Length: 424
Ligand code: HAM
Image (cartoon, rainbow, N blue to C red):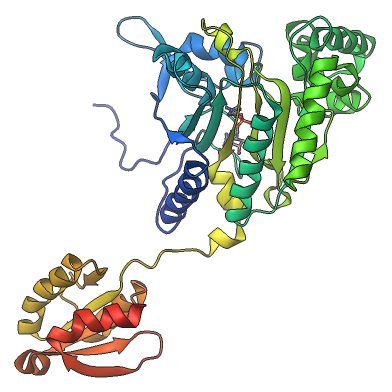
């Protein structure tokens, strides 16, 4: 018989999300739903796994994400499937497959859920992590870029995250624009090939833009002197970028132009942006996004200019002091029962409160009064409703304000009104 493990741990790079963090994550989704929903974005859900080709073609085979980090498996029918490393390619696939692009434009979508990347785990970097995403498809107007970026800034501010917005344009794939720039970049990289980290040399041919993503010190040094895409934009991309900046100025969103910001995924065109936080150490990007005007065509659709972003929920929570201290107050009344008759009556009392829409909880461990009061404290209830034989006999309840410690005896049939009026 093989050795049976006596205990298990979660796979490397994954973690269990326990209370109170689990509450905070729901809170983040609530804030997102509120802010993005009120700006016209509708929720969608797509599968956690997709055909591998969606990512190979959509995100790009030369990217780190696709070449090194995907969880790919073959199913019993021999299909190659991949746990999604990001949401955008799958969302575009869903839009095309469901012909949303043939309906009213633009399509404004929001999404949240788990993503999977086999990266080296560290603070703020996991193999399973959650993203919240928004995407707008169908318009290339600079106003869309500004709307999306402003929503990102507002969302982060609402979550108490202090961030800097880095902004760039990486042009579109045209001889007069990015292709011209790539030729200049390749020439520069060739001239410095010997100084690049060995593992980055192959990128000169495979995908020169990706040399900007390198974590290798010698390559980072070489890239400091590399030509900037912003100096090579064609007139229409330069004008588009200028309009995006002017609109961000109009709505008071501060940004820093970062000509070396190229983002790690191949589908990006024109506007690229990241919100970075000092609170995070090496994994400083809380939110990243950009335009991807050519992705729908790469995935077999017609031209569908689009822009969006994803924010890492795990990183957001690490970066937010405000949310670190946040936990919900959901139990209004904690019922404390003293004596067996009262214990028996407490379920009925809790149920009556719950039916009236009041958050209520009580002891389910048969504990004594002191321990029940500690339970009331832990539940963060505003009130303890103490019921003993005495109170039962008289049809009364002792209502204790958990904040001030004041308590008074009231008629049982007044309890609902009292916790309601005192609440407001
Ligand atoms: P991304 O920059 O690859 O973009 O990821 C967006 C965010 O997800 C990052 O800024 C980070 O907060 C979080 N993130 C990424 N990898 C990890 C990880 N291993 N652990 C924890 N958090 C992580 C995208 O995914 C694009 N789909 C964004 C987009 C949407 N672009 C256009 N629309």
